[in-house]
Structure formats: structure tokens, C-alpha cells
Image (cartoon, rainbow, N blue to C red; front, side, top):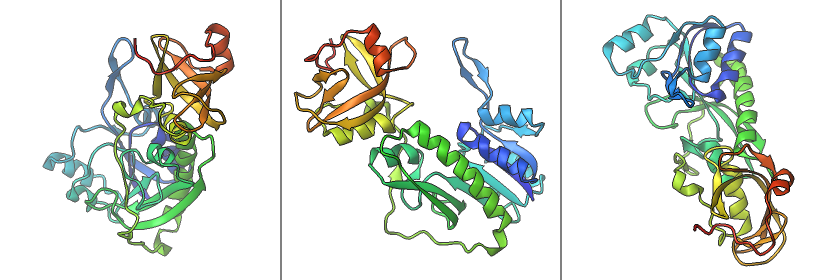
Length: 304
């Protein structure tokens, strides 16, 4: 098919690769404009732009698709389908109506659960047993369109958002190739009204750990916010990001270090497996403890 691909971050790159490998004609790649990044704050192309240019594909990054000019340029491509995955711009109705076979979105949840911006984070933070990807026909509402195909996977007990992100990206790439190959045979499934939840964008204010919460909640927060923005606490006046954890046994005051990096919570304890101190690279717990003394009885979370 003649496809317009629309995506921006790392999550979208395997999908673009899969469409090219499957033999589809990518008539244009749309992504967000380059943004300042790094110490020099120089404009850096998005992962999708970098990959598209390496593949020799034409790239466009309009700041909006609302103008008649932008919509005419899109229509002139003559695409049969637009494949959209984590693009970052709302598509006006005129754009949604342009491809002859519609706009298909790859969404990283089992719709209607976790519509919105941060479905992977929210699924882990909520303690969901499973998640997946949906191939959805796009319409004007936020992730409200009919679902053409869904693939479910379990969420592992110690899985982080980073690890699940990579699994779902690969799953989405497989699913869209299958959906396009069998598009004529797929029946759109209207999303039910029951079970709708919204995955709000992660607010950095959520990232500070409240050690008075039960261990299962603290563990989900740590894993759900890893690697970004990273759940954090204080240790000896330094901010520490906690990046991997698991529920453990033990009792003590909230935030009290019991042994090694096993920390008491409001109910139970968590064991910190990987972390990152300010200005340092991420380390596993053993490496961190070789360079930093953390005695039992120390209380995490105090800001001095």
C-alpha cells in the first residue's frame, strides 16, 4: 500500500522498519520538528526522523496540520492509509478523511482501558496483570475509534515501563503488518462504554516516593516511572532515582533501611535493585553499596 507514516519517538521506529520490510511504499514520514537537546541545546532530530532519513524516506515535520496548505500537501501524497503511532499532533478531521482506507493508530493498551498519553506507565502503576496493543481506526475523539485488531501480553512481576515499552513496540510492529495484510477481512469493533480509563500524562510531582504507602504501591510506582521520569527519594541530602525494585518482606518505619537496600514501607518492604544518584550513571544495588555506605536504620526521603 501507499502509506503515510506518522510517529516521533523510539517507540515508533520498529513500526516504520516493519512497514518498509513488508514492502509497503512509504510516501512520506511525518514527525515532530527537531528539538533542542544535550548540553549544547542544539536541535536534534527525533528518532523517527533519524531512521527515516537513514532509509532514504522523505520527512516532513510541520508544527501543525490545521492550515489549508498543510492539509493540501498531505492530500497530494495520495496515500491509501496513514499509520499513526505516538505522533504527538492531533489530526484534524480533514486529514483523517484524506487516506482512501483511513488512518490507523497503534495504541499501547487494551482499549478502552488507558486511553491517552501514558498507557504503559499507568498500566504498571495500577498493577494491571496484562496489557497489549490495539490497531484502531482513528476518529476525532481521544483514542475512541473502533478497534480492528488487538494483541494482549502479561505484565511481568518485576517489569519496568522501559522493558514493557520495548515489548509493546515490537508487538505493535507485528500487529500493524498483520492488520494491513488482512485489512479487508477485519471487522471494526466499537469500543464499549464500560471500562474506559484515561492515562493522564505523567506529572513529575507524582515521582517523589511516599514511603508511607504499602510496599506494592511503592514498587509499582518505581517500576512504572522507570526510566523516565524516575521515582525518587532522598539519601543523605542527595536525590536518588530508583529504577528497579521488587516487593520484599520486613517491617520498620516508613523509609527505614532494613538491610542492604531493603526499605520499609507503610506495609511491608521493597528491595531496590537498580538506582541512580544525581550526577552518576545508573547502577545495580551491589555496585551502589560498594561506593556508598547505607547503614540499617537510615531513613530515606528526608529532605535536609
